Length: 179
Image (cartoon, rainbow, N blue to C red; front, side, top):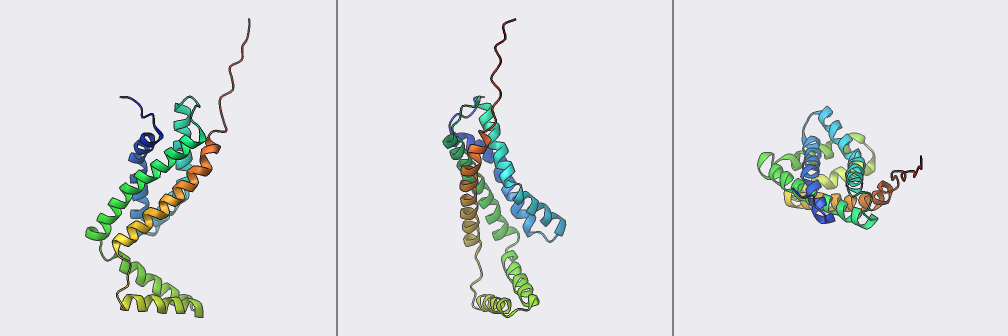
């Protein structure tokens, strides 16, 4: 099988791993197990490392030929297609598996804000409670699209910053020795 040569196809191929990775982050953050939520948080913190490792692997496989722009586009493609996979998984979860999760998270936020007790946080809790009473709770489609665009923005910026970094280390040129 031929290896993908364009940065778009390399990014799409990388998204076959990256999309499920992003989906696992979402799923780990909506469960009610603190250890699994901690794992999700650690997976978020590891996103730059995962991105850099993927871009570096591609750069090495190219024989150290890819430019910074090619690696950046590959990273953008990886995030784009990975976010599409994650958006699908998230929408299925929010619409059919656990449709009340956004309301529960909103109610938990209200409780936590009231527990803190400062006037500013009590005001935020009041505004959130009024939004719930008026039916202005975040809908699954709005949540998914917001998550998609935030993740894409982070992916574009991190790919831009990591592309020149992964190109820094190259193998030493072979020494010409005349024995």
